[in-house]
Length: 188
View 1 (cartoon, one colour):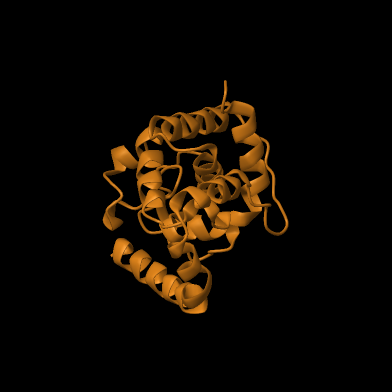
View 2 (view 1 turned 45 degrees about the horizontal axis):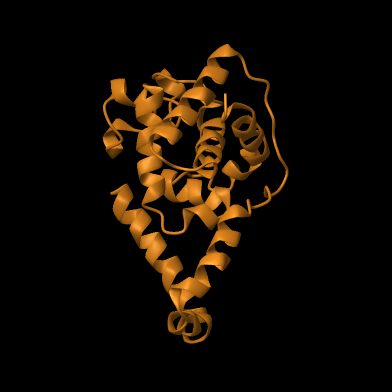
């Protein structure tokens, strides 16, 4: 169900975008040789978007720091760039404050578990899988890779397309801290 919803949302967004530019820049780009397009694409990919809105920050304990490192390791293992780790860490900061949450009883949002508050009933995996930081990060990244253009999207849009949260703009507040954490631990 989540995959169908995400694809529907992406289709609507894609149609709106394509309707606005199809006859102009895309048609002109299609006529130019691929070699001419490479320098432009490289320049766009290297520019990291600026964080949106007011930024939040929390101090991390040893468990949270270990979870940051686990997210970065899973991102590297998946062969994805630092931007994927930034989106993943910001998402986890919003969903669990980087704590690997088990079932929270009455305070729990349905059956949401782990770093990303993923739900077994939504197909994210078993409770044991979802509460494994490498597995849950890999599952999140698999969803992220299905989002066309995620590398150039605003963080909150990329995270929301994967997570389908009731609070879609909440991810943006963690972008600076996530960026700083990736900068600190990516090469360690």
